[in-house]
Picture 1 (tube, protein in one colour):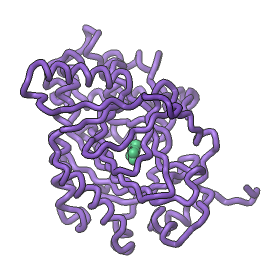
Picture 2 (cartoon, rainbow, N blue to C red):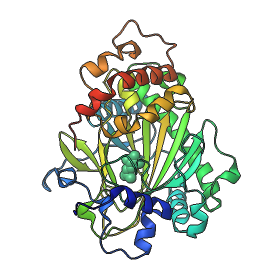
Picture 3 (cartoon, rainbow, N blue to C red):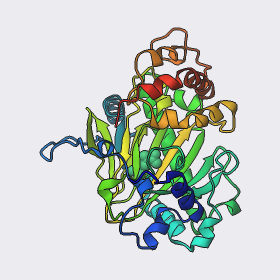
Picture 4 (cartoon, rainbow, N blue to C red):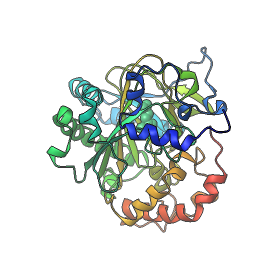
Length: 384
Ligand SMILES: O=C(O)CCC(=O)C(=O)O
């Protein structure tokens, strides 16, 4: 790269197009712009060999509340997968295929509509807007940009007015979110039982109250070996439920190897977020994952983040301020001293736990911890 390369100007020019990565592809780029080129070691494959049978656990929810033995077996699988992988795929989860397909189509329609309509949603003002579209939420902070455009929508506890939602996928967003909220509650019930708690515990402390949808569109990439769709990160929420199409690209870090999360028709991917790892005393694992891009596509995914209810509060602002640290710069597992400071939150082994501690208070304490330990997390980044 020449010494007169001006990265900042390139980022600004790209952002000002307001047409995202899709705009570059539509313009026919044959080489990806330098802002998207990742350092080679971050693209490292580290994958299990083709011979390996290892794969993310698949859990079948058919009959989960109908048969006590089956219920106990499912809880055991949820516990085991959440402790060992931090990830599992759910089948027979009760959300009709029609709703999943409509959601994928809705994201496609949003991204493929007239770019002048789409530009009206282009913004980085997460504090003021519940519905927005941009490319790379951390465009100006990350070391390299990802080959991805994202449409974000806060759907709970206070969804936007219907007319604020894009006309092309309004009804779909509402229907899908309703179904995902219901499934999220079921998963929190199973996780509560898996932790040996009352079935309603995680719901009662507010883990299922806030829902943010990130609808990702990964255009086909002319040089997929040089970039990423989503860099390695863990999620800063309680829990994420991900809908993906059949193209593939999502990988999870397991035993220091990247393992493909192979698309399974009708399945939804569930992963534990940082806050659930923290409030479960590290029992459940929030694990690094990433998305590769391909020279086929576009690939579409919808990541549904369950997060604390009071998203305009001081503590959430603090989390946002440090988002680059929490999401991108944290070791794969929060270990040792970092977690000691959160011990007052933990229901499992500490007699000091109060059943009245809410997820909101947990977030507040986490944020205080983040403030104090941000520099420690930055310097101890070890993954990817
Ligand atoms: O698209 C995917 O498969 C992963 C997306 C993701 O990890 C995210 O949006 O945080």
